[in-house]
Length: 185
Ligand code: AMP
Image (cartoon, rainbow, N blue to C red; front, side, top):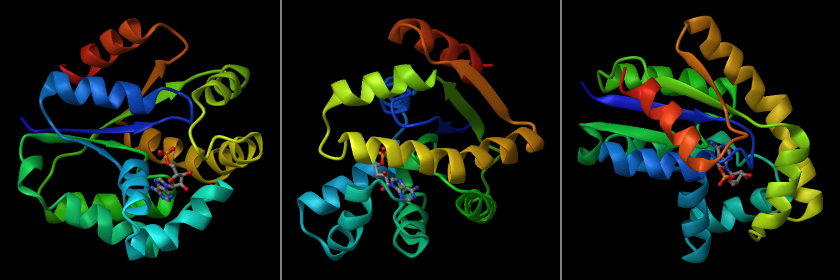
């Protein structure tokens, strides 16, 4: 059966790393909305130009820029076998949009994974990562935005019954093993 996996978890939780590893293992596309936006910025597309200011501030890019992008990506042929979404949905409105979209493309309920990592470990990891939007100020803001807008998404999926909480404060291989156990069941 086709596997749809959603990675939740705050910035620095390792979801990008794990999503990439799992996508390779399962041979399905890794769809990172943050990566799509960074590549749009690098190519100076209209989307990139509009998104940049929000990303530099650690704010969410507005839905009007994100939703069509996700809809288009999930209509591509390569998602037939499955997909991994990393960085989407980031708000309850994005989660309800995704539900409707998955209905449109006849996809079964996704497997939702929340990677949990203590706050001080997140800050430490983000400061070491040194991505362009990883300044102390934007890190603080991104964690606030996560708390305000993305944490409610966890409750949304918990109520639906497809949420798996995974301890992300372990070595990469251990975390991957837990994810494999969840996804391959
Ligand atoms: P990420 O690579 O997932 O950490 O995303 C980097 C930045 O891209 C975020 O801080 C947001 O500004 C923006 N972004 C990525 N995904 C989304 C999304 N689903 N909704 C709104 N903004 C997003």
